[in-house]
Length: 418
Image 1 (cartoon, rainbow, N blue to C red):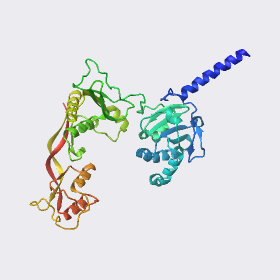
Image 2 (spheres, helix red, strand yellow):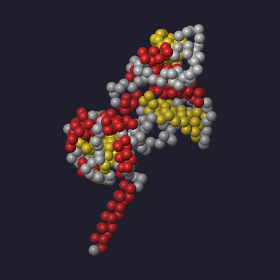
Image 3 (cartoon, rainbow, N blue to C red):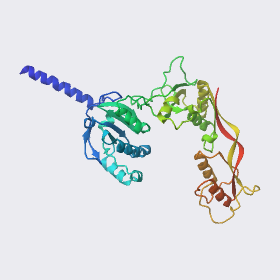
């Protein structure tokens, strides 16, 4: 009897310790290849079951899609999730998962025109705490693919397709780019170890490639203890990083879109996203991290110039703004002898958009040539919107302006490989 009591006590302590670990801060984040315990799914709406567990889907491919109502891309992806659920039927269980309450999600579903128009009819795990604790993530959407009790993949919705689902069902091992949100990475600590031979305060910074599982960041941190200002960029594309620093050095009043970018490089796809490739894959190949230290109080323009100089040196590039002749959309006055449109003298106030706003809209669309305004007119027009360039041209004519295509010497950003 005494021996039985001792064994019972030991068993109790072992179980209690295991539960304590699960309930404490030591809960392990499940990764690809891990066996998934029978985790509870405590509340489900829009389904035949109001609750469930992971084990109940052991004979299906279970795809947990972490999302919330604030994520526009997640909401758009629900239409694809629903379509694939209908294609595969009982072979697959698509389960969108959110921390938000049933009340919030039901209200959202009722009011969503997009989901209604696309006839999305999915179950939703709501009020979740358990699953998000075992599949930690920094960004959504976050898809966890579980088949036969094992985590097979962790991805974004870009890799959710009929072919990829079938590959998992066929028992094949995917070689996709996997999403890895590194929850343990502390951005308050330097990306690079500061030591002799690395980089020093006020001297050249350091650069490295993509940092898996960390969000895109642009941060400046002041350290009063050692009097330093730490500037660093995480997982930024090279072209975007150059443009962000030049925007500090030389601010512009136009959109630096592709029509103002000249790439004198062997492979332009290294610097501009190719839509044929999954964005996460492209980021992992071509994004970089950069870090430098400067004394507290260093002027931001001086730091930006130093960053550009470092990028030029460390990456073997030359990024700069310069004047080049380009075909443009030019807005000019009908009467070149005056700076004002012919209707400026009328008493009825104009309630439309300024030419500056019209120019930005044209450039922001990124399908038009650069836009040059040669009118010097700063007031409003009666133009609110337009169907196409011909429509805009006609409306501008009524306002006393001409829109035409002509070459002009304008500012362009040039990136050259040395």
